[in-house]
Image (cartoon, rainbow, N blue to C red; front, top):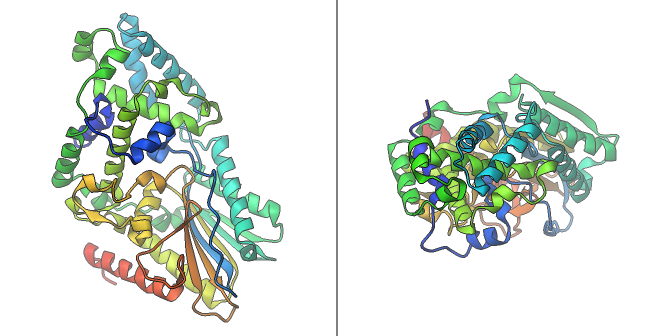
Length: 440
């Protein structure tokens, strides 16, 4: 039985039914130029035209990188995302109820199924290359981290695509720096921080107040049924036999994930049938949905980022150890977007700790989830010191290889003193533990 709680979201995500009365010139203007921007957590890693990085203060050199990265581009997780629209379109086609566009959609979905068969959730070749490219740039951006026999401690969740992402990343490093001392782990013993999910918090994400807010957000954004007549030639048949909301939702998602395989990098005819306005509504609703599940939304208690307290404490303790023992190297962690986004929110990176109960505020405030968690999305915390005796190094944060900010003042921005950052992050941990009733 379908989850009745999330259905209102999908009904509007399905947007699609929606023609908007007015459109803001922000995310919409980007979508007009680049439809793939709509993809959200199905987005391809944005590695084109990465900006130059700010030089480190005089005398400082990088010596350690603490990293958390999402797996690279993957196939759809399971058959359902294709099966639902395929069954609907196939039945309608057998009864002569599809338009030419509907027939095209049926052919596209069948091709998607054939391409993904036996590969559900697998890392694509494209996804492996993303990790190799990120590793290459990391090595060349911060060469002193990887000098001589520096250590590489790499760990992934037990999901195969994460393990393969880790392997692709580390093998690229070793290929370019054979003397690195590397270790790779793929074990249940690390899941408590690599992919911890608090069931109580997850269940509360769409409580009554949050659901009411998202329903209201959705209701303002769709108006008509253009897509009914685009795919089907009999509106009475649709009313009686087609769950239009789910069908269009799955069609949209199916079209968007295709860009993550080599076969899907060309022009996607199914994605082309949606207007820029429809894609924009989809982006808005997916963004709001992500905020409910990962952000400090006051409608559901404002505690979702606290799911990543374990990971944040691990990041702090491992950094402390590297500094204390005067080591050089990198801690590489590979997991999922459901960890990366709340972690970024918890740390307050780029303002993602924004608190509100008004979902209309997200876009103008720059709370755009797709900028955080594309396929292969990653956070790099780069540590700099003057020498091995330096007990208070500097750090710089990179979110998807772009310099990022913290809600802290610094006369060296985008660099921060680790002592300041550490105190700030420990306060965040303490706040989270207090809110969750965890004894310290």
